[in-house]
Each structure stands twice: as structure tokens, then as C-alpha cells.
Length: 141
Ligand SMILES: [Zn+2]
Image 1 (cartoon, protein in one colour):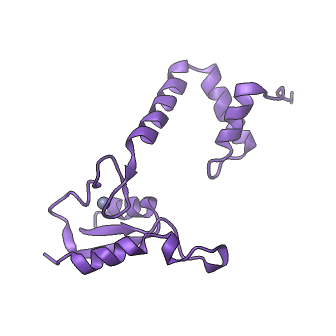
Image 2: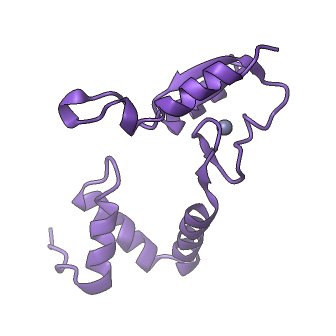
């Protein structure tokens, strides 16, 4: 099998950036970059636009620390959700998995990590303050 030429410049930089993503090794990153460059350039442009939109528009919900495009995420803004229940999750991805199940109708609180004293991650590095504030102020319906 013929070896590919060593990538340089912008191509090498993009390969390096893809390898920072979870589960993406150098070979997969190289494959994706070559796909984007050898196929229809609209795919690459669409990917770039989607990344720009996420960077510019997505932020953290002021209530629960979920991903949001407004001050509150769609769950916190939904008056039909049970305000007497708060499900604590580690990441917004965990929240999304629970939401897809359709079984939970309360609200959430995203810690944005987990306690890891050996890595110097304590309650102050997570969103426990917000959880405490919410648990004292929110009333059951
Ligand atoms: Zn929220």
C-alpha cells in the first residue's frame, strides 16, 4: 500500500484539530480531512458554518447549566415541567440521553463534571452552588 504524503500546513493543522475530538485517532482524522477536501466543498463549508453557529449561539442555561441558545434552556422555559423534581446529571449529554427516553418530566441540573479530589475537582469547581440555590428556592407544583 502506498503511503500518503506527510500533511503540511492547513491540512496538517486540521488533522491535528480532529485528533483532539474523543474517539478520533490520527488515521480517522486524516480520512475525514481528505473526505472534506476531495469531495464536494459544500460539505466542508456546511460543517464550518455549523461549527461557527454553535460557537456563536450556544451558551449555558442560567438555571440548570444545560446547553441553551437563550438565557434559559427549553426545559427550564417549559412551564409543563415539574419544578418539584431536579435530576442531577454530570453533563448535558447525560441530560439528552434521559430526555430521549421520554420518561422524566422534571427539570435537571448539570454539574459539568464529577467530584475528583485526586484531580483537584471539588464542589467549588462544579455547579453545586447553583444546585443548592435552586433546591432552596424552587417549589413543587
Ligand atoms: Zn435549563
